[in-house]
Length: 319
View 1 (cartoon, rainbow, N blue to C red):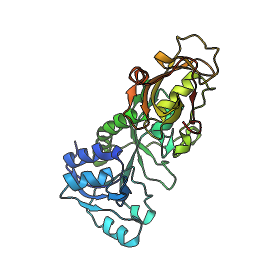
View 2: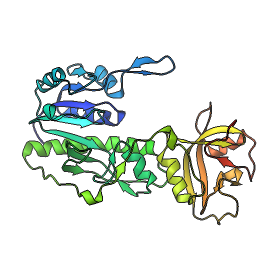
View 3: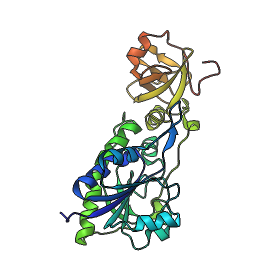
View 4: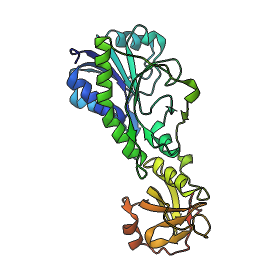
């Protein structure tokens, strides 16, 4: 294990909180560079992001900076003045320029097994694509997005009913061990950087609310992956029995016979089984508008839904 190191941390999202905690426990975090507070909630009150909130509460000895532009010359000079053996970047939200990075050992934790799923939403896209395995990568920073040398990886199995939110939390908890191992190897001079195979690159584009739809004419496996891969955000919006809801979790029922009903039709309302282009989708959990998320059995006890009703996505006007 390496001696205690001086670290500067760049990050904004909740994904990096466990790693920031581990860095503070194992090393000395000299500064935390994060995004400015943003309006949030109905009152649009300026609110710190998860990293800023954690640092303010737990890292009293670390300087907390929230620059609008980290590459501003004054900010660059200030950041580079902090003593540091390493810079750790996790879901920061701004690209670090060459003037800032020059002669610094800087690493990035990314939630995929690079070169698969470079981009903003690797966790969602791994589930959407039906991947059975994913993980984390620690890479050097490069001019191109997520194209740096791979310094270390970890691996996680994606369970069939696992949502993107659950996988996010598992990979977040998996990050500290990997980052600390890479820092130890850097200190001991035993890193073995590996170039990414550009022929294997896939891209994980940013998601939006426009993605929150489901095409039931697709096979049940693909429908299940879309529900779980977009849960909890942006979520699959549907209309059922005149009510709006979001699908939280689904499974594909390979043991069910192929339905002769139109895709999107409830073939067994009590069990939440919906006909697809191939196979049957089971709605396991649902989030009705204005209520808490619940399992399907609890949901159907309070609504009037029958076999043959249609699950519409997106909701039809007026639902």
